[in-house]
Structure formats: C-alpha cells, structure tokens
Length: 369
Image (cartoon, rainbow, N blue to C red; front, side):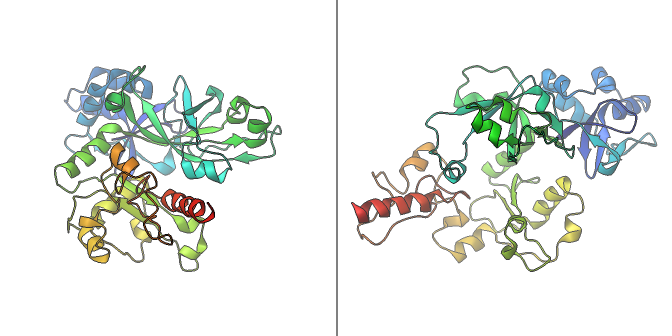
C-alpha cells in the first residue's frame, strides 16, 4: 500500500492512497462509499493525517484497504474520487516528531570522503524546519556556498521503541519512503558539528509516498515459500544519468532486480514493469528494448552463481564475516599473485565494490610487507 499527504487547489491537507495511476482522497472515498450503502470505519470519513494512520496501527491499514473492495476507488457511486499526480501538490509524506539519520552509513561513501567507516553508528538529526515535500523548491541560503544532496531511504517508525532487539526491530516499522538529505557542507564541517549544516529550511524533502511494510514483507514471504511475488520488491538503478557511456546517445538504460526462488525459470518482466509503472506512470511507453535473465539463465551464464544466486552465499551475519570459509585474510590464496574479490568474500554481494577494495588492500600488504 502506498500512502501520501497532498492537497489540491484551495484545499486543506488530505490523506492519499495510490491506486494504479491516480491518488485517491481516503476521506472522500470513504464518504462516497458510505453514501452508497457500505459502512467504512468512522474515522476514515475525516482522515487527513498520516500520523493518525500510524497511531492506529495495523488495523487502520486493513480498514483503508477495505475501501478498495469492489474496485470502486476511481468512480465510487458515480463520483470521481481519484486525482492524477499532475492535479495535486504533494506535502511531506509524514510530519514526524524527529528525524534521526546515520552518517557514513555506506562504507564506500565514507571512503569516497576520505574517512574510515565509523565503528559505531554516527547519529545526527534533521530539524523540523528542514522538512519539505516532493517537488518543492529547496531554498539556498546565503549562509552557504557548498550545498550538497544525497538520496536516502527513510524508515518510518510506527511504534514507540527503546532498546529493541534486532529480531524485533521490523515490528516497529510502519513503512519506507524517500528523503533528500540536503547539506550545507561548509557549515557542516566548519561548525564542528552538523546541526546547522543539516537543518536549514527545506533541507529534508520527504516522500512523495510511504510504502507500508506489509507490502514488502508479503513480497519477500512469497519468495520464501518458493512462489514468484505478484508485486515484487525491486531495486532499480538508472546509471546512465551519471555515466553517459552506459547507453546509446540520447537514450537511457535502467537496471532492475528482484528476488525470485532459486533456480526459477519464471519470467518476471511483466511484474517488474508493472511495479515500476506504479511509481513512474508512463514508464512502459518509453521502453525500446529489454534484456532479461532468469535465475536459471544467470546460472548458465556463470556456474559460480548456483541456481542464479548472485549473492555468493547466504545473507547471514556469519556468512558475511566468514565467506567463503573462516580465515584471517579471506581474500588471499596460496598463490601470491591470485586474490579473491567476488561476492563470495566479505562483505558479500552488493553494488559497493568493497570486496575488490579489501582484496586490493590484502594484495598491497602482502606484496610490500
């Protein structure tokens, strides 16, 4: 489920529910259905705040989902209750009491900045005045000459949490959204602490949608049961935005990946494209060509990827630290001129380059020791 906060011309804040390529006003939809003889939860008739949904817990999501029964989201009782994205102005996806962030959370980003990854989480906060919305302008202050931005995943906490165990952590997550971590780098590093550099007005655009945790959990649960997901959880990259050599002149390439049962021959093309279309309407109309590989085809291409597993092993803490087997230096081999740098070495698979980085450091130590 995808939820948002928005407004239309001359309207107050509304709670939105994404249905195909439109955004439905939850309260308006509930009132129309009530007038047509159904009985939605009474609080939905005036619903307009994401915090209200979060505070009501999982039951609220079930009650919102029930509004879609019968396929009446767009035209309930003959009345249009859906708005195209062009008709609305997104507001911050939620107005939280605090925004906590973790600095240098990506190892390669820390190294890129000339810093070692922190041994403990490096926490900082974004101030409430920095909160802004999708497509809203970012105000550039005359206090700074070095404004930077970072696209980040935002985790929306749904329940009060303190000293929560890793095993129970996801029970406290309401959903996920996007945040632009805008920074005034000269203030951030010149002040000696990060509050001002991270907290200027409009420096935290949030949204547009929150994807609730149940959608991702349901997708991954289907995979665990050995079934291709109806609505897969997808990782998408458009590298040609930053490297024009990745695509023909005037064109772009998009890379998409989703989980699927080991060794499967099922073609996920339609389901992957349908998911992207949900978040980027019109995507399919722009596709000129496709290159698709199922897990079985990945294995035929490279038999090291058993069953199509490009991760080089199980995604467990023990595997991350000890793959391919327990060894002080897992990158070195008995041959002094051969080193391992694949996803089968720590820290495992991912678009981070750290396996090669650590293999190079291993080789440097060995050669010049």
